[in-house]
Amino acid sequence: MEDSKIVELYFKRDESAVSETASKYGDYLFKIAYNVLGNKEDSEECVSSAYNGAWNAIPPHRPDILGPFLGKIVRRASIDCLRKKSSLKRMYSEACLSIDELEECIPAKMSVEREVENIEISKAISAYLLSLKLSERHIFVCRYWYSYSIKEISSLFKISESKVKHILHSLRKGLKSYFEKEEIIL
Image (tube, rainbow, N blue to C red; front, top):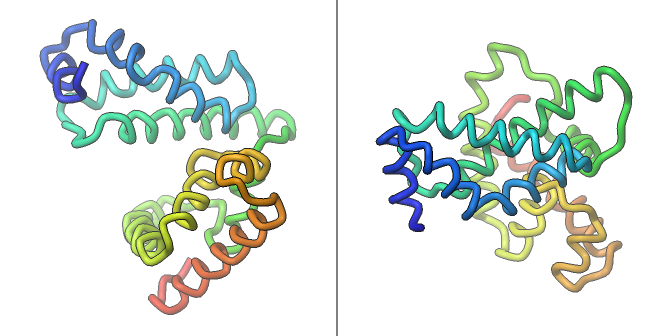
């Protein structure tokens, strides 16, 4: 089913919107959640939470592209779940590792006041990504949005793991420089 028709089902408050969403995007959402959490049960719970989040957000919001909209919801739910679990015990996951890598560019803890500035930071990151070669942009997004492991990125792009690490290091360094050039204070 086309995204626009699925969105219309949400606007009509037709419960089949959720099943259509699950049919079209279930695997995609699970992959995002699993990459963050590394746990099947928690990932399934976050995907269910994402369906609920979509139900509550549509309407009034009408996403232009449904897939990334849902991806953002499940990613947030997964990171929230990871934070809750991490506060109880320290756990390893690619999401923790990739977030730690970005700390040199973006502070991990945000205050309420900082939330207002997040929009500008998001715009700056988007502008930085648009300045990159397409392959670099894809590698950045795979690591820092989808939480792919170095090994997965290496396999996906058919380059060595050391090359992936080098590219990511350069991209983080470039992002930090971009923030400084644009006078974005973090």
